[in-house]
Amino acid sequence: MLPVIIFIYFALAMTTLSILVITRRNPIHSVLFMLALFFHVAALYLFLNAEFLAAVQVILYAGAILVLFLFVITMLNLKAEIFTDPFIGEWPVSLAIGSSLLLLIFFTLRDFLPGPVGTYTIEMIQRETNTKILGRVLYTEYLFPFEIASLILLIAIVGAMVLAKKKS
Amino acid sequence: MDISSFYGFLGTDTTDFILRMIIMVAKIAVVIVIALLHVAYSTWFERKIIGHMQIRLGPMRVGYHGLLQPFADFVKLFFKEDIIPSSGDRPVFQLAPMIALFATISSLAVIPFFNDFVIAKNMNVGLLYLFAMSSLSAYGIILAGWSSNSKYAFLGGLRSSAQVISYEIALALSLVGIMVLSGSLNLVEIIEAQQKHWYGMYVVVQFPAYILFLICAFAETNRTPFDLPEAESELVAGYFVEYSGMRFSLFFMAEYIAMIIMSCIAVTCFWGGWTLPPVVMKALPFLAVVPGLVWFLLKVYCHLFLFYWVRATVPRFRYDHLMSLGWKVLIPLALANIVITSIVKFLF
Image 1 (cartoon, rainbow over the protein chains, first blue to last red):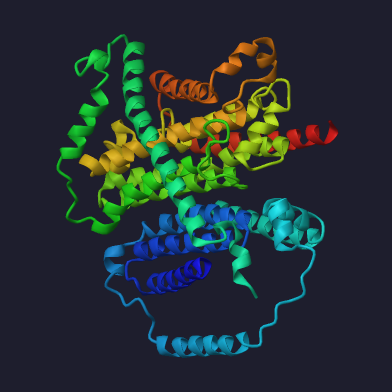
Image 2 (image 1 turned 180 degrees about the horizontal axis):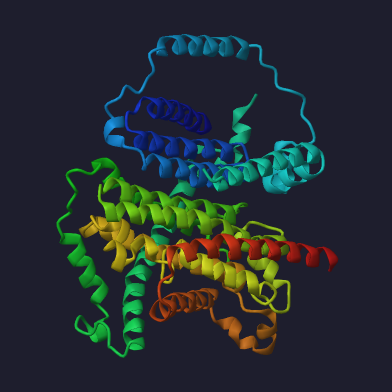
């Protein structure tokens, strides 16, 4: 019973927080609600025995990316921003597409079948710890995709430096 | 699919869960009370030390040699009027000090104080959790700076967020050597791994990483010589200019707890935590009588003394020097340390 109550709390809180993020007029308040949302996501990872992902979620999303958002937003002229409409004119169309997508997911969920149990069972992950297993999988089975991803990130870093260094 | 299998650690039944929660809350209360007492007396300690270093006496009036000074300060701050700027953002202004204190105080959960006394036991990602919480402390500062609607506070907040983000990288990288050597992110396991060597302290083999860590710890906690977010001579007092009374003291507590946490991380990762090196224990076996907490606290107090010593000795950095030191010196050195440590560990 208790796990279900906790899950219901997280599901409701995450939905509410996401709605609050997009409806606030003040971007700083949106960022703060997003911060709370990231914490709830991290907690969900913890319930899935993925403590490494939970920690990385907080370090990278809450601790780095969102701080940079905040950094940029504090430079904006918020006094003018607060009086503009937070939604663009076509929001009913987006709402219709979004809700039909949600309905589609609801109907497909009924036919959801859990896949066959592989090598990485919950017991094994609890015994070996999530960090170790994730590292092993990333550096053996998925080494090539992992290297490609790091190369793409490196290109992005170099690109950012080139753009910043360019003299106008 | 049975969802309860994911939640195995919550316990099998509700009474068990409630019992565990009560024990947990009691532990948290004890640790927080002791930590706050430490904050109170580390302010006294700091004023005394800096006083004597500058050939003054420091606080002398309240109690014997000013021993009750922290309580006098607390009473004064507690009853001071709480002023909120009328043009600022009221809810964010009120929230910012709480975020700052929460981010630092929750780090206490994973620190092993003595013989397995940890609030969150079996935290497999203890070190990552500490990084996560220390990266959150930027929020308190940047939000305080923004919501005060004041130039000085805002500049202090901006400086601090840039500083904390930059030094966090070097701080985390300087501890990767420890992770490689101990093969774990769990702080208790890191201490146990150190006990397997005769020297019993990673500071012996990771001395460069220790120096890097200390420099980054000073920057992360906004202490001199990196206290640019609150540079009195340029920014009046930085991000907390507009705060007074209890809300100001929350920032104050957050800074001191952050200092204590950084000292605790240094002690746990580099100085063997509550243990003494096996060599020393073999030479002087009677030391086993002393409880581990004593060694832990002594090591932490030495680090706190270092924070004060540096504050009384070194002048403040210039901001561009601070940034180039962080990005061009500390991060490459930390990366080199990781490479060398990994190669040495692979070879031996």
